[in-house]
Image (cartoon, rainbow, N blue to C red; front, side, top):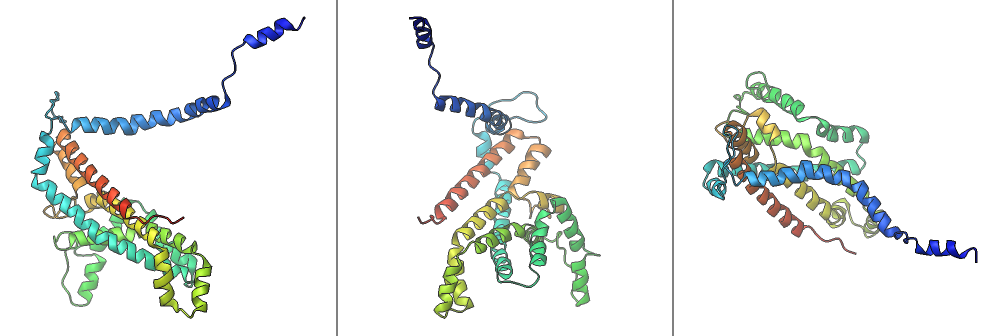
Length: 306
């Protein structure tokens, strides 16, 4: 009888929450700091920028007026938007193909047992570690009209100097060459990792069947690298569409706007022309293009077989 009050008290106490509920609350507490930082520095700027695109907000005006879709209509009729977008697409077209093909060739050379493996790996990947300011300084010296190494080499063989950055016919190609040299190391690593993961049994079976090196390359290696190639092309297209730094440092969009990408035009409109609302509208139009390109590339990406 003496144990009954204690038993009744124990039975009247509220039941402890189940373990999954406690784990969920604990997980939310751990996630909350990230959510707060993500919302403050990512979600809020995106939403605020979208709102700005519907206003006439400016760095020189105190008041802000809602203008609806006027900024978007103006952007569609702005020839500078289309020319800078064309420059961006052209830059993407002339950099994606060499960045994919050359990085594949470099990875194949290293993977096949080229002598001095560590030297080649370091030489291929080291430029990717350099900051953009260092890379542009190196190529400014190479492209210098009078004392640059490239024009000195042309002069040595009896050819005239070339305006690598001042001639509209060469400026974008010169920047593309810089970009390929600078960023190819990342794609090289992706291909090399994919090559090292290929099963040796495929090559052993092909060797027993009498397949030569080229047949193994075309029938085994390249088909097995299809997903990696799609990934490399997808990442490179997105990176090239967002080009800004090296062009702005080297040419600032010149000569005559022939190298100005769309992001530099957004910068010029927003921080030189002080039209933040119009610059935001151009940014979100370009953002929509990137989303469409990303979805198209994901659709083209082969599914992994079970």
